Length: 187
Image (tube, rainbow, N blue to C red; front, top):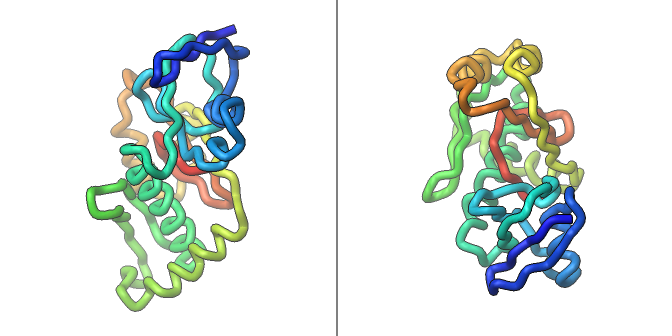
């Protein structure tokens, strides 16, 4: 059993391996439905990530101060998945959330993405949302990451820049789309 401390100072006991979603659900179903992520011991985590030690938690909902960057980062992944579907030869670099939204570095042999392409990409993003893929976090070694991204030179460059001191790499799978990422993402 582990002890979880809430923002109001209340402490509750849970089974080791409990998730943010399950903690939110233990409070109310409506809170669980609104949960975008957790903030465990000050670190943002996915709602499905197992918690195995004592600590403090905040449930990140749309009105939480950390919600907007998570939403923007998840939107960046949707954009990248849509762009990859529409432009299969595209190479994707980084796609971080920024103050005004997000951006994605791209390189497309057939020509760069233009403003005229954005409505098509947006429509594809809407299709992906309707497909309702889960966003699955996985920890991988550098060698595994190299194999996954062997045809994507920008991802290989990011893998090589990753310091072993930072621990393993994480990827997210969303349907057919896979990307290097620390997360978290909306459920």
